[in-house]
Image (tube, rainbow, N blue to C red; front, side, top):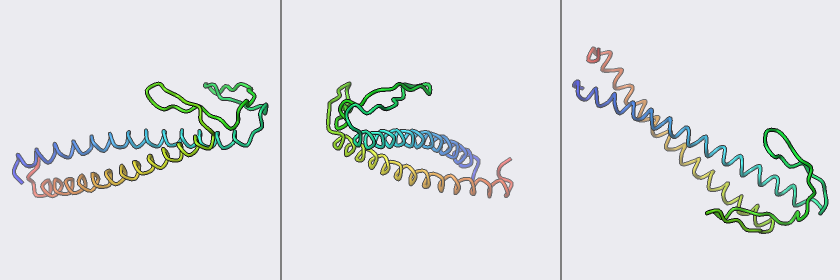
Length: 139
């Protein structure tokens, strides 16, 4: 490798590291969203087993909860996007959440594959640069 190729390889390696960091952040966001959907799904399934007027604890944030009574355990209100929401059966809401969870799982699998490919490229480039360093071509 000549000096220009070494500089290009070093820049490419740095770009790979940046991409890997972005992918790790995106993967963390996917995981957090998946966890949120799973909690919502579990909550809906639990609520669907309740009777009207059953008392439950509802989280309001900051590790605080309020007591509330279940009015319609067979209904949920879900976001349709663009600041729109609609009432639907708990069963339908769980189905939509299952679909979203499956989509996130697919995205996570693709992300993991992309990360593996990027890691392999990075390792290959690192090995080449180390070889050049060992030859004394890199100071």
